Length: 448
Length: 178
Image (cartoon, rainbow over all chains, first blue to last red; front, side, top):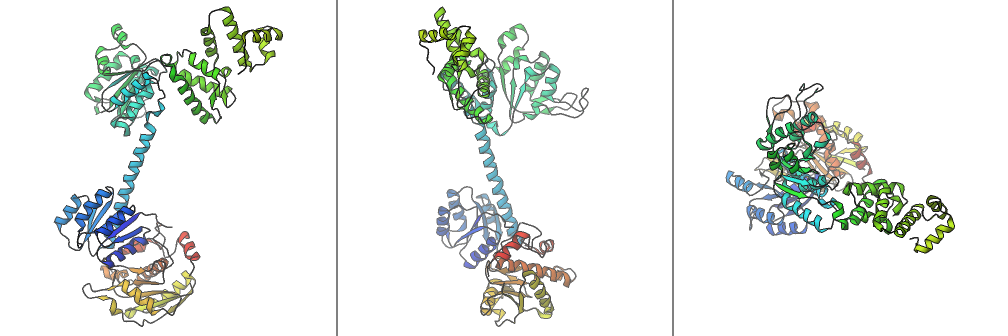
């Protein structure tokens, strides 16, 4: 079975050396090339990509040491192995200091050469895998998932970009469903800590005792049911970001322990005695009025000040209605793909409903509404009747206040819902077909 | 392969090994083996400063010496070989060519201070012969540790691999036109 290998360039003024080494590496499946002097080597490097260069130190004209420096300016990632018949500690040290991977002497021991080249190839492979993985992390972490072109969201994203570069504690404020976790993810993804984990803790979802264990972990036997030692979220976040969602719901006792960790960077697992050192960045989120909770005595003032270093407030969806079409389209495309249903657009009437609705549940409610519409609707268009009832009811109320306005809007809504099925619409409205036709004519209603 | 020429060089009292090797190679490559005397002076390849024989020069001599044959040629030498720039080689071959050469010298256990072992010596010689001839069929080094085409830079590595091609290399040998 053929071995996969890279490319090796041999630079030596002696033909027999170049030939022998090229033949040797060809047998191992390397793509090989050779150069008799510096200018040929530089030319070959300009023409193509090389993984490893075997470079003789002593050559007429530009010697190997000088050539190494020049090769590095063309390709800083090149792996250079120096070879020479004139071994000296000084030149070896100099070559390695200037970035050579290794240094071997002629005549070359085949075992030593194989070993050095194998190590060099492995290092290159690990280096390029590292670069690839970092690029993947960067790709997956880009804040392109945060959709919004409104002025308010542009300001939020600018704040995210600024604070992400620092290690400051961030408090994200916003109503439920506004995307606080997405913002926390974006801060982490744009920070120096992005290659370490972001560990979310939903403080509101757990009772006090479970939250303690979730945060600090526990030793085996710390309480009934603790059969094994368990790492807590604080430990898992080491080096990365700890995201405390719904931080306002944390009980006072746990607040004390949390504050101690944030200040001392140390904690002890439940049932343990040895402190563990940790280091992470804190991002907290709340939909509550923390100041009020401090006043009421249910949130510690010192913890409040610890968390309220840098605040990002996310506006509710109703304050940035211009983002609704963009968000709706984003969810349409995303859920269409997931459900394998070919939806591509919203009927103008449907979009009108989406824009006019108040969205007390914010972006999460919008996402749910679009998802529901894709389940019940027929591709490629989402119609008004596919959307949840509360949208049309709410829109109806917003249309106008006169009886005629309300009647018009109601009839239009029913017609849309039934797909302009006159018989069915008349049944729902409890009028006869003729009356319905008269109303349609009276209000100038048209099927779109 | 139409035929395989085996050319002994400085084998001294080990000529009998050549007959055994010929039988084994006939079986491996399904071909006829001819043992031929060299009509060149191997001293041309001797490097006085190193006390070794240049394998690349020997390859050229073997090629010229068997120009009348369309088959491949394997020189089996009893002396130490080197290729320029290397301290030693077990053998050398033309990749996808006609000529190859293999040395007994560093395959002998007694060279490493161990007790002489003709059986072990023959096994190693057979493996390296098949290996070098494999290169003549265009085979590169194989990642499969048991395959005879696996690279061996020291003698213990030769002992680990088998004398057989893995199925991928076997297929490649069989499908290579002569």
